[in-house]
Image 1 (tube, rainbow, N blue to C red):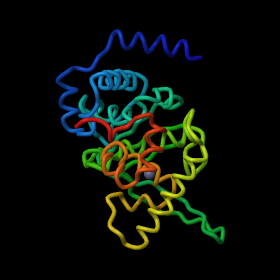
Image 2: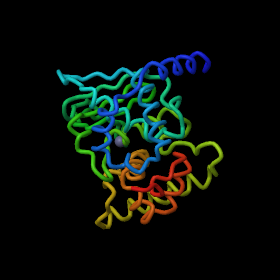
Image 3: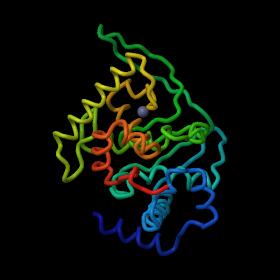
Length: 252
Ligand SMILES: [Zn+2]
């Protein structure tokens, strides 16, 4: 199964590369890419080329996606899988980018079995086995600790991999019980801090659900890594094992 895919990928890489000036423009706006070594940057660029060859990215509602927008989204999507491999994203192709927040109809069943329907404005959404939807305006709001692309692709890694509705399963070679305990304990601590009204550099939205906690902490792991490593050392250590990266240990 993997043979044909590997052959195609080799072909893509021999015939396509990212323009150096284009990459420089993209990287200048993504500060968390600066600490990557030359070797890591080269591999990230290869992943971006393959990602753009294998996925279909469309602008919605008349949004025209520039090359810079495509490469920027791809670079942020590929950073979490730099050491996990592109196969983590197999099984789906679509990325839809709206100009701004988009409205979706949600249904929720309450404790009495009554189904409530409501509309929600979203900055991003990830479907299990399906597309990722992003608001370009919110992609542009990326700052330290907030990154909608990394957030949605962390959901994708969780939804399409092993695990339950709360958390992804531990990666190969990890202590599965330690991973789970660390996430659960950190989530409890975070919810307690939010309930107590304590100021935190982590988006309080992370208290909504364990799966949101994982996605929001993944944003912090890649874009505010030194602060996360300082304030949440056990969680940082487990995420470093999960993603097989140590962004806080990088220069820059
Ligand atoms: Zn989310």
